[in-house]
Length: 584
Image (tube, rainbow, N blue to C red; front, side, top):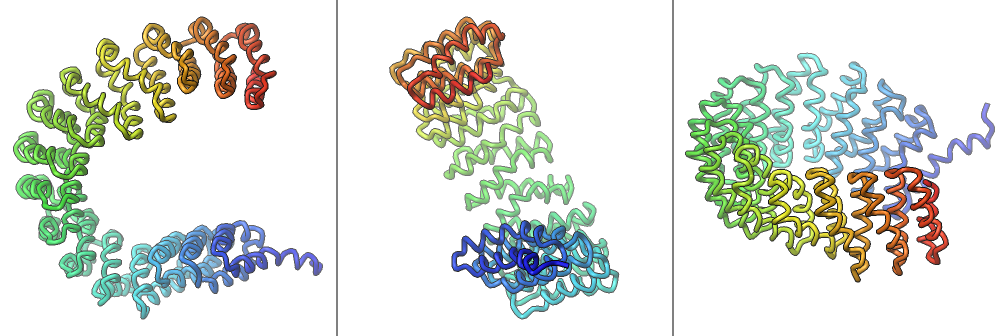
């Protein structure tokens, strides 16, 4: 038997939660909702079901951010109410309320949580509670509840008997004909998922007629979803059936008056082509794809440009050369930089499909034009795809054209562009070879070590390590290490700092002999630098070199330097020196 004091203590989590949820500050209410699982653990499953969840059911009138967090938390509350079983029913009440609120993201999250906990309900409970909840939402007066209901059909359908299945199909068809466009949109959004749960006959009888109606809806926000539905329903039927049942809708989507519908058609073009098979793809879809590449809206052309290689994989080489590449050449000089950037991301992946001769004949011109594009992202996207070209034709024939683009990107005003090209230098180096690299790009890599942006300097040192792995330690000793170590006398302390970063990173690949002969003497000199930042970074550098050299070297050369730094006047230098000494 519990004492009054114990009862008071057990009530504390609920009392604290109530106080916080009543607080005027929404941030405090949000933080309390984030701690719901912790509170539920303290209360135990029984009290969570009987006290906590009922209280939460009454607390659905709050800021959208708080309600969104609550809807998310309740989806992971199955274990907190005792695990799968009848006890999970209590979670349906607050989630149903959240499914009817005005804010869309809250409703969507509540529907996700309902779908998540549905599997935890036993069969009888599922039928008596979850399906009833679905019907209640589907017949609600407000459109908000009806939109939420649309997302639950695909979860409910597989778990009910044939009579209920027929009822759910009828109910869904009713929602598809709803007067409110938002409800029709939600129904269309979930139509493909729902169709996948049905037998082929039911899809033909009940879903296809309403699908055709939605695909011709007067609201483009509804029609735009017809494309995704074509793809999903197409997976239910065979290619022959798709030609008869879905091809007319696909044709209308490809030439729809709304650019948003045409954009979705371009986005899912390859999936639609696969659904109708190779013959229709060759006879109809090639022409349709070319039209999308020439669409008056830049967004549609961008989506089509992203699909050039994906669609090319479904065609013969002759069709690619005759129809796709001429349109691609037009996109090279498109007025929209986003179209050109999209083309640059994947057009070079056609090289393996075309083969060496056809690539040289048809793709190289596109490649060279994009390399000269005024927009840095276009040039960068092409360089990212050099590997695909290299495997087919080799990169040397393009190297002279490649060099100006690399230099321009390396000196671009935007530091993120410079950072991106640095990351591709090792790949370029391996493809271009050591002689070309030393002659054309070696000095470029060294200039990055003195960049005004720290991220560039840091990436440049990592770049040197990767180059050493590509060309070998001997090459690094002759070409990189002398130049890097020569920076230690630079008047700007940032260059001297970069030397230490480079030593730390290169030390892992050059081996103990190079560390002993060239790196340790340099770090010892920098440990006496007048700038404290240099001295404590020298201590950090030594700490990283300790595991890479023999213990005798540590005791005779590293430790004495660290002992001096431990007596430094700067406390940061002392701290890092002490840390490094612990490793000795």
